[in-house]
Length: 117
Length: 115
Image (cartoon, rainbow over all chains, first blue to last red; front, side, top):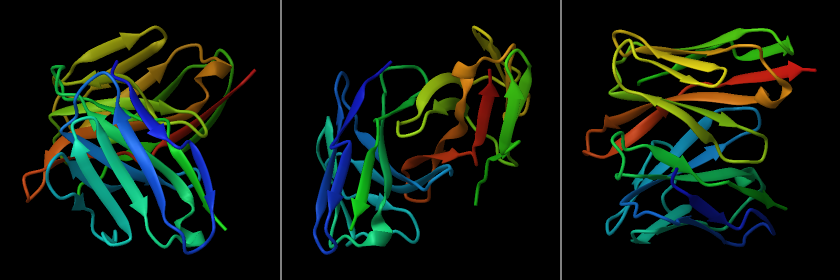
């Protein structure tokens, strides 16, 4: 299957600072990537759809000025959590849609654990 | 709002037992994926089903897509401790009003297999 990486895997930051998370498709090009947030023992919550070369599409209730998404190339999307607060602490996971196969499957990165102190 | 309900939410069984996880919706999906996720990691794709009535097998795991493509099931035979994890179904893709596609995730089934 396709490989998606995320960096960093874990980050701890102070309240008020900004944190950037990178999502890369390593062996394929991804015109579409997705950013999810996952709370403990719960399913994935889609935050936004990242489209290469255009603005991201945010889900209802997700602040686009708070969670900045940039998809500048076909292999890289970034999520920046601006002015982070403790309530932003969560597990953030990205996925990329692989158009090479028959089913346009999405493959996930390993996730980033964000802790805001 | 499209929803994918999974049942059961939690399941704790002994090694060697069989189990079935269900994924149900009132919406039709063009395809449906099953994932397994372990703590602190991203979901790993197990299988994609596309055709109504389709059955796919992956070792001891059997996946079925409903005839109407609204529901799916995952059956595990002779469960092992290594099967422990969060199982997620996802219907994909669904075009939104803006023309973009997004996946709808199920509520998840947390499985624990005891040795």
